Each structure stands twice: as structure tokens, then as C-alpha cells.
Image 1 (cartoon, rainbow, N blue to C red):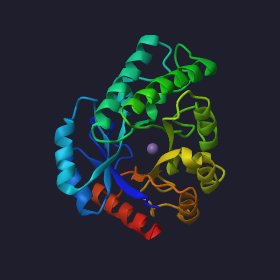
Image 2: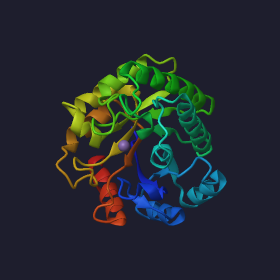
Image 3: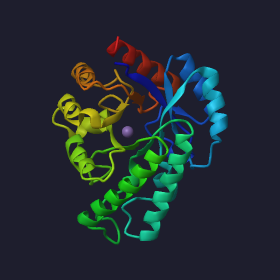
Image 4: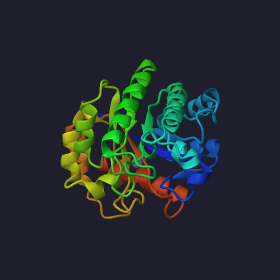
Length: 274
Ligand SMILES: [Mn+2]
């Protein structure tokens, strides 16, 4: 078993204040991640075409780092695009945004995450719950199939109740994934969201099993692991028991500052998986 650790680098200026560890300067952040002993970085670009994959690859190769995943949240943060929007044109724009992000990420051998772009039902003009799930299934079927043609999976992230009313738990999300026509969509299990929604985080991870493709690593208060009251030992045992060999991606607030947060996370990870 080889669980690996990555750190988030957010390049979306509109997301300031969000739960990302490193910010702004890509070359400097990559150098930091490497010097702290990370295996990979998780990138949040402002647009699918914002970064030249060849340039990113060159920076990473120099430091022997991989890309664990690429976030698509900019589609929501910058353009208010959602896969479950009432407006068919906006849903198409949302799908195109993620489609192009998949093409970018695939050049870095990384999967794309769908988090905030899943949207919610009952907003504004009103999408019913049934419609929202139809739209979400249609989008995940199409985008999952597209990711597969690029040799990648697509990561779907259940969020807590304050961020979506679609799917909040690993069990509900697993059931939904089983209803899709593709097996290329995997779950992103975020410990911060799970701490709010799950009855038992370790049990939920066991239930998710091989459907779990990526884990977001944060403490109960979304500070870096070790700075809250999360009980990590049973979680680590569950991760070992399901034979997880993906990434723990540090998605936490840059508390007390980005470098300290990155250092705290990697040291807690090494301690837990020693
Ligand atoms: Mn997350």
C-alpha cells in the first residue's frame, strides 16, 4: 500500500480566503511543495487554458513531483457555472468548462474534481430535485466517458449540507455512482465535509471502498491535520483496510500561514502513515 500526499495550490484570485494551502505563484509553490517532501500538488487553475501543460510539466519534473488532481471550482467561483442550472445553455457551458479542464489535466496525468460545480436544486428559477439529479447524472455520464478516453477517472466530491443539497454522504454518493452508465467516476472523500455529514467517518470510508479515488485531508475545523479534534487513527485504519493507494490532498485553510500549514500537514501525514 502506498498512500501519497499532495498539497493544494490555488491560482484563482477570486477564491481568496478559501481552504487552499498554497497560493498565487506556481513556480514558488512547486518549489515549496518539493522542499517540504510532498509527492504531488493539486492544482486549482482559473481557466482550463490558463496554464501551458508543457510548462507545468517542466516545473514538476525538475522537482520530481506529480499532479494528484485538478480542481474545476473556478467554473463556479468565476462564472457561476453549475451542472444543475435551470438554463440548458449554462449547463452546456458548465460541461464544456469541465471537458476542457479534463483535457488540460490529462496532459499532466491527473483526474479532474467536480465539487462546487455540481450546484444544488431549488435555486432561483427553480430546478426540482428530480431534474437536478437527472442533469447531474447526464453530466457525469458524459464527462466520465470523456475522462476515460483520456485515460483518466473523474472525481465527484460529496459536499456538506451548507454547500449542496444533492449528495452529502459517501453512502448516498456511492449509490448514485452505481446508477451511472460509466465506471470512470470515482468519489472524492473530503474529511472536512465527512466530519459534518457522516455518522462514522471510518465506517463511511469502508463503505466507499474501491469507489474512493481521492481523499481531502483536513482537520475537523478545516485547519491543517492535527490542528483540530479529528480522531485520525480509525480513519487511517479504514484507509489501510480498503487498500487505498491514492492521494491524501491537503485541502485546508492556510493556517496560521501557507508554509506552516503545508509543513504541519506533511508532518501529520508522515506520522499517521509511518
Ligand atoms: Mn474538498
